[in-house]
Length: 93
Image (cartoon, rainbow, N blue to C red; front, side, top):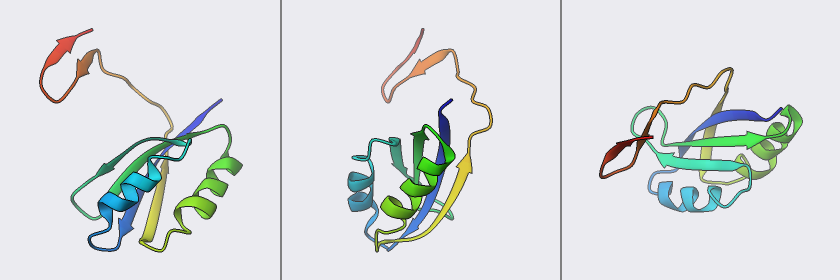
């Protein structure tokens, strides 16, 4: 069973776009967003097992000098909406 998690990151000021471009290239990463608030970036990741998640976080994300802090939230249950959304219009599926 796949494990999904959200990884929240605080990064060095001004490095948000560069970090996002690097992170999105990892196979484990589903999507990455720059956010406002306590954290700067949030990434949704998917792995096969917890050990893979730990290795990904330690070896790939936390080893990047511009990433100063991470907080990982493992998804317990996921709900999907019935509406497909995009930036310009909303259409029912």
